[in-house]
Amino acid sequence: MATDYDSPRKTDDDSAEDSLAELRDRRADASSGRTDVDETDLAESLELPGADLSDEELSVRVIPPQADEFTCSRCFLVHHRSQRAAGRDDQQICRECAA
Image 1 (cartoon, one colour):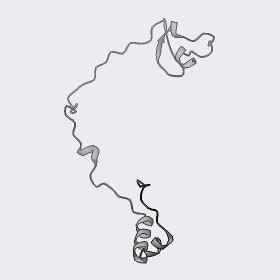
Image 2 (cartoon, helix red, strand yellow; image 1 turned 180 degrees about the vertical axis):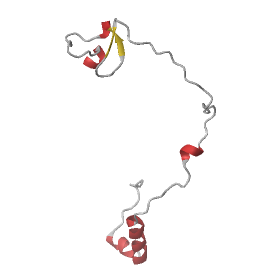
Image 3 (cartoon, one colour; image 1 turned 135 degrees about the vertical axis):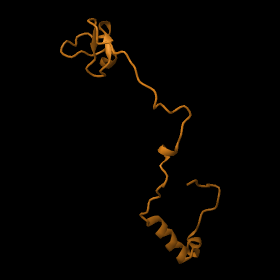
Image 4 (tube, one colour; image 1 turned 90 degrees about the vertical axis):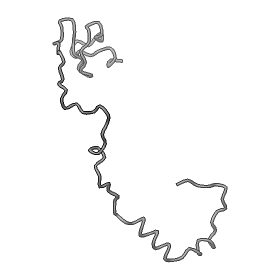
């Protein structure tokens, strides 16, 4: 809630003027455990243009790691052996993860 610092502050006399019924209503609103629930599922009702991929087939050619490549044990990416961190014989770690 935004605060207007230029407005005059309430004094004790002003707070006494608040009606008891108004204070009870505020307390009931603040202490209600009810949560607002959106009845419509937004994810299902939202339709993006060109998003229908039901007829598409994924075809990717997977190439196994070559003899001069290694898989980093931290980021699990395949790197060329020139990217291997020096002094790490027990674990194969790339330079980016070692930094």
